Amino acid sequence: MLKLTSVKRRALIFLLFFAVNTATSAGTLNIYATNYPPFNIKSTPSQPGFDVEVSIAAFAAVGVDIEVKFQPWARIMRDVKSGVATAAVTCSKVKERLSFAHLSDQISSTRMAIITHKDYSGAPLSVVDDLHNRKVIAINGYSTQKELIKKGIKHSSVNRIEDALAVLLRRNQDVFYIGWESAAYVAQQMGILDELDFAGIAGVDEHRFYLCFSKKWPASKKLLKTFNKGLKIIQENGIFQSIHARYGL
Image 1 (cartoon, rainbow, N blue to C red):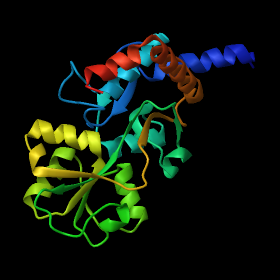
Image 2: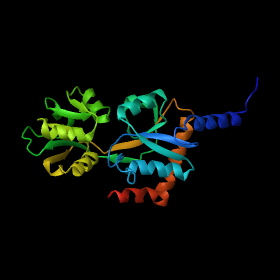
Image 3: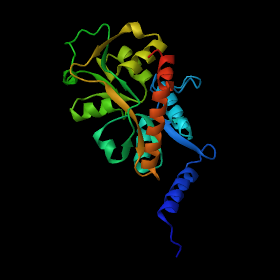
Image 4: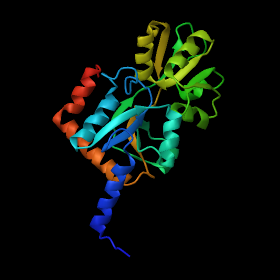
């Protein structure tokens, strides 16, 4: 039986990693994102979102070419968990995800928001527990929905921010619970920003985002370290800051 040295074994794993993930072209790594502007923007390839651009730039800094593919978030998390998908962009730290994914260093953050129609006349809403007995909308699979489930808050769910905002305005709903920046960006694009009120959540710090790498993907820990190295490079050389500046951040 052929025996491999530890060095050769690591090299074989690394080669296997690139051989398996060649859905677009040889040596190109597929990373997955859902449409969550301005972090990830499916509709504008020339401006695909600052988390997408940061991910591409960080990998490029260490010589890895990636392509970001857009899919529904629930499907992405299912594939990351099973090992079908390598990694997901704009992943929040949720306890259940830590069982199947490694988190990168932080890539961005958002403020959490309670969003209502300007005509909302119910009781003031300042903490998540205030959402009990309200007509609440959330996005399928997002950490905000998981928080509502954990707290036993009944809610309706949709797959897209655009759908949630439309439901909020047209179907007698009370509140949409999501990240502030994303909802504001989409509402502005839809021309409905002036119909909405945004409120921060008392006592809640910024919500941090990461890349989450499937623990079942070959050499995922090595890939995680490689990404973190590239992220540090672009933070130190100013590329990270210039990407955010193009989005007005």
